[in-house]
Length: 243
Ligand code: HEC
Image 1: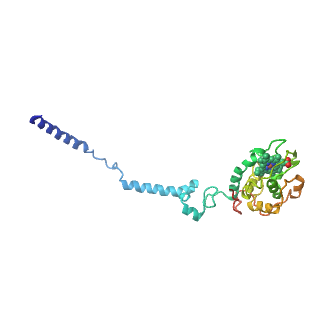
Image 2: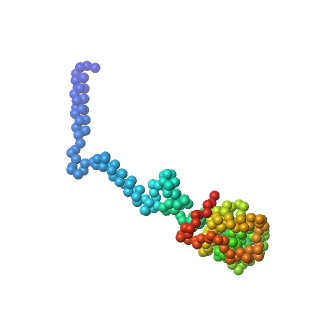
Image 3: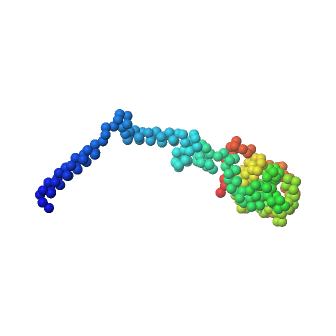
């Protein structure tokens, strides 16, 4: 409004400026408590990242390589079910893993426990059909089985028997499922490979009918060549491919 007022205003503005300047001042830092320079923080971060990359593969099988498609192509995919490299499941473990999921097809009748259903579906657990000759086992699942059979001292004769699974499953899938049932529920047997299933398929290519127990008697103890001892040491063959 008038000149005197503007003089007062100028004074108060100067005072504000003075206070602002004082507020900006920081207390002197005690020696040893200065903020860490930014570049040192970066150096530490870099060390942490590099150290993590070194420790990861040792501790948990984690590695930078897993996400690097170039290194996967060069060294083999080390992830479970991959085709090799550090930390990969061996062929036996891979077959068991794939076989366990393939077993869903069988579990409706033979049950997840492998115990079957008394009087209807025979057990696969502790069955001589499962752990015995691989020539017989592969044939049973490939072409099916009908008529009265004896499993672990018990008779079974389900109407219509077991249907063939050969047409529905790839040789690799079948091999994995059979390796799985031969090494589950206390069973112990050799691995069955895709090549073994293919061999039996070729030998029986003209067959259409389900097998009977009598037909298969001659194969009860016979093994298809090429079997591999089961267990973590089973590294002789590539794992059967499941699709
Ligand atoms: C629809 C029910 C059903 C399904 C699914 C089925 N089975 Fe069977 N399976 C039977 C029956 C029934 C028999 C007994 C046949 C007979 O009485 O002649 C049998 C017998 C067997 C035998 C021989 C006897 C024994 O207990 O060891 C084997 C081995 C076998 N099945 C494995 C399999 C596998 C592996 C699968 C999955 C790929 C499968 N089965 C799926 C019903 C089934």
